[in-house]
Amino acid sequence: MSQPHVVDSVAALRARIRDWRRDGQRIAMVPTMGALHDGHLSLVKIALERADRCVVSIFVNPTQFAPTEDLDKYPRQLARDLDMLAAVKADLAFTPGVSEMYRAGFATKISVGGPSAGLETDFRPTFFDGVATVVAKLLLQAAPDFAIFGEKDYQQLCVVRQLCRDLDLPVEIIGAPTIRDAHGLAMSSRNAYLDEADLQIARQFNVILRKAAAALAAGAGQEETIAEASRVLVATGFQKVDYVEARESLTLTPWRRDRAGRVLAAAWLGKTRLIDNVEVPAA
Ligand SMILES: Nc1ncnc2c1ncn2[C@@H]1O[C@H](COP(=O)(O)OP(=O)(O)OP(=O)(O)O)[C@@H](O)[C@H]1O
Ligand SMILES: CC(C)(CO)[C@@H](O)C(=O)[O-]
Ligand code: BAL
Image (cartoon, rainbow, N blue to C red; front, side, top):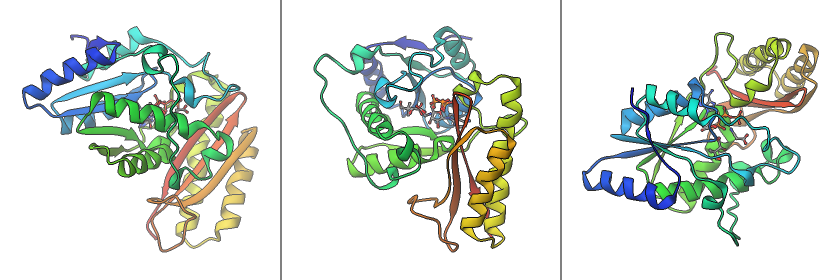
């Protein structure tokens, strides 16, 4: 199994992509922060169903972390990541350092409105500025035909769609379903922070959200259903619930019964913050 070619400069990334373009190849990009798992690999598989070549970026983006967050302890394991990418035949890994992405004097910030309102932004107020800025840079650096983002980070996916639409970025954004473990826990690099006792609780996250979504679909009141889900999360062992909300799937405005909906939530287990979301099933 050959490892993907690795480049860590924008110039080398563009040179490789120029060669592929010259050969008429279609290119897909999968932006990640590394510490890869089966969720990420599913994005590479989707990428290679659409395109001839897949470039995976691995960059722990400092501008999306608040000073109090886990930038320093975020898992970094490049050698293992490259082995995993070899197994799914990713072509290229782009692994820039911080100074390559943010040169001395960097002074630009992209701020997306619309779907960034509320949810994550209420608790991570600078998060989507950091995500939008780095995603815009990555998409301009690689200029892929497609870019794949997971529904696990559902609000992020909506923000990226809005970003690309508003800035006329010539890329098709593909949303990919959340990959879960055998217990339904959404795979996430931050699950590595959880011990066995935490994992038992974390595995109830999706169960509780699904139950709330099913209740909403069956006609239960929104306020009571959401309050109950929040109460059950705490009773199950989550120390703090940042939010549980029902939103419209496309716009992320508050959910109305006649629209496609999603229940989205963020909750804490010790120092680990988990997010998840599920579809409100059609009534
Ligand atoms: N379980 C999953 N299923 C599908 N896609 C996923 C899953 N987990 C992450 N992704 C997607 O992979 C891309 C890179 O995400 P990232 O590197 O932040 O991984 P992560 O596991 O979400 O990490 P974190 O624990 O920091 O949230 C994003 O588009 C994200 O939505
Ligand atoms: C999209 C992303 C790679 C931007 O840093 C990150 O937010 C992530 O991994 O979801
Ligand atoms: N998966 C989203 C990246 C973050 O939480 O910083």
